[in-house]
Each structure stands twice: as structure tokens, then as C-alpha cells.
Image 1: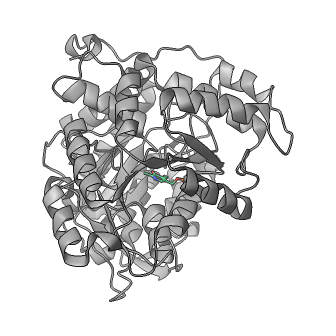
Image 2: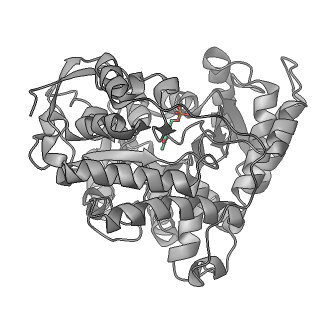
Length: 466
Ligand SMILES: Cc1ncc(COP(=O)(O)O)c(C=O)c1O
């Protein structure tokens, strides 16, 4: 165990606050009309109407003074920006992959990777789906197959590595369709849809061996891989005395490439990249980057964004940062647990995931309990959360039915370095109040459903007032 964890010392932030942004409070009557206008979808609420914003940890981090200083040395040349080379140096040092293709955000990298590797009729196994990742695989003609361990689908399982791949499930798929129809496995670190759950190094090592034997690539979704490395240090035998930096390198060395949304781990407001080891694939990826992203040395980013990302990476691998980051999320989770609110266990890295199915057992999945609960939390205190359940999962392309995943969750996502312990207290108190009156929360009917990633823009109305 690391000293910090074993001694149960405070997770106090390893920084002090130099600049603040004022928050606006609204009345309950205002919030009732705001949520109705937003079609009961928290993505459609204006930011100015939100008190504590726990919608996402994506692009919402507070940058450090050094990152802001980096913004001032942006080299905005179209080609060969100095900041690209600075980013490349930090990338080589910390991830260790051979080749870097910057992209405007994570899904830009997913698009290029899927177009390069997935052919119509292929299968892409993964440790649970992520919305944008699966959509790019499907649009390239592939079929996603979930090969995560069963425990990941059980909110009450205390398995320390719910992000692990079930190698038996993967092997069944490979035997059924043939390894030539499986271009890669999509391995997500700190699996978002499972509640921010890590994979273990021992599972990754076994997966790497299996995939090498069968000629299948291991492509990491490294969006939260540094947080995953911290969990390995905390939980996996043999890793307590290893640094997060060295664990990160060990993970990357066992994978063939990665797509990364830099808006999470890397403490920036925009950015991402595709990492590869194979030179031929890299050349093709650079070529696709000029169609979809911009020149291969900026990938849709300003020079200053790449500089902030390079510095963000250096700060993200600091153990004091991870201890405070994960400590704050755990603090909120433990408060909610002691108030009797059902949440996904163990508490994940980037947020606390409320088990909306257990919170609102009187609602059917097609009455969208998590969507309804996120709306009720907003009305109670102006706190913005988001749905991660039946709405996010979308429809089965074959049957057209709602997928009705086992996990029906509301995600309270904690932006990095933004909110204080008192904000966590207010959040826990608000949710405990909603919990005390949970039988008053009614279900929703979808009134507008966009074709892709419906959770972002869908609209709802209450089924009936209770
Ligand atoms: C695990 C994971 N992968 C990929 C993405 C997509 O990244 P972006 O939003 O930067 O396109 C996200 C974003 O939330 C994510 O959480």
C-alpha cells in the first residue's frame, strides 16, 4: 500500500487557488421551468443555470498556472509547431508509444483507428462499450462484442478490477468467428460505463499473451489510464512501491496503441491523440488526419492547446495529484453510502455512479429512471449530473429495441481540481434529500430521439405527475 493510502492521511489538494469563477444560484421554481424547457435532459441546460456542474469530467478541469503560461508560448504556425514537438517529447517519456497523431479530441482518434482497422463483417471485442467508441466501430462496419468480466455488470460486486477482460469470453468469440475477423480488442482503462472501474496488470498481461498468440492487436482507450495506474498501485499485489509513472509505462508497453481523450487525465479543456507503434499504420493514420482533423502536427488543435496538454501530462502523473483526485471522489461516495444512497461499488475514479434502478425501483427501464433521477437532482439543488443507462446505451441496430443494460446509473462526475470538499458535502446532502422522497420521482417518455448518441440531445416529458 502507498503511504498515503495506508496511513489514511487526508487527500488534501496539492495546490492552492489563485483564480475563481463565481457560481449562480437559482430558485426551485426557476429550476422546474428550466428542466422542462431542457426536455428533462441535463445536457440541454445552460451552464449559467447550474450551481454545481457534475455533468462530466471531460474538458472541465482547472488548468494550472504553468499550463496557462504554456498557452502564452503557443507557436501557431500551420506546420511543425514547436508545441507539437514538446508534446511529442512528453508523450514519449510517459506513454512510450512510438508514434503520435494529435486529434481535436478522443473521438477524432477513434474515427481514424476504426477506419484503419475495422472492415465490414469484423468483430471488435471490448471491456464494455463506450458510446462514441462503439459508434465508430459500427460505422466502419464492425460489431462490438462485450467481453468484460460479469462482475462489471453488477453494481454491488466489490471486485477490485471490474474492468478486467474475461479471456474465456474473448476466446469463445475468436473460436466462433475466427481471429482474422477480430482486428483488435478495444481495452478501456477505468471503464466509464461500469462506474470508472480499472483493469489489473495481471489481466492485461494475460490478454497481451492471448492476443499475441492469435495475431490480434490490443488497442487501449487510455482516456483515464493514469487513474487506472493509480488504482493498480493501490490494489494490485506487488505494485504498492512502484510509481504511477512506471505503472503507466508498463501498461502502454503491453498494448499496441491507444486512443486518448486528453480532456480527462491530461487536465486540458480540449484535445486528444492516437498513439501507435506500427510505422505503416502510423503513416496511414497521418494521412487520414489531414482529411478529418488538420495537419498531422496539430490535429485540430491550436499550438497553445498542445503545450497545455504536455504540461497537463507532467502534472497528471504526480501521485499527489492522483491521491487528491481519487480521494475527493471517494469522499463523496462514502458520504452518499452512509446516507443510504445506492451507488456502484467499489467507488470509481472519475465520479460516483448512483444505482438509479435501486434508487427508483418503482420505475420500468423504459421509463428511464436514471434520466428522471438526474432531472430530479437538478430540480432539488441545481446540481447537474448525467444519465448512464438505457438512454446512453441506445437501440440494438438489429431489433431496434432499447438495449436496457443491466446498469442504470446516474453519474456524478467530478471535474479535476475544480470543486471543494464543501461542494461535495452540499451534493451529498441534496441527493440524500431526493432519496428521502424517492417515491415522488416519476418516469419519463422520450419525445425526441436523434439517430446517433441520443443521450446528448434527446428530449423527454413526465409520464404522469405523482
Ligand atoms: C472512455 C472514453 N473514451 C472516449 C471518449 C471520447 O472522448 P471525447 O469526448 O474527447 O471525444 C470519452 C469521453 O467521454 C470517454 O470517457
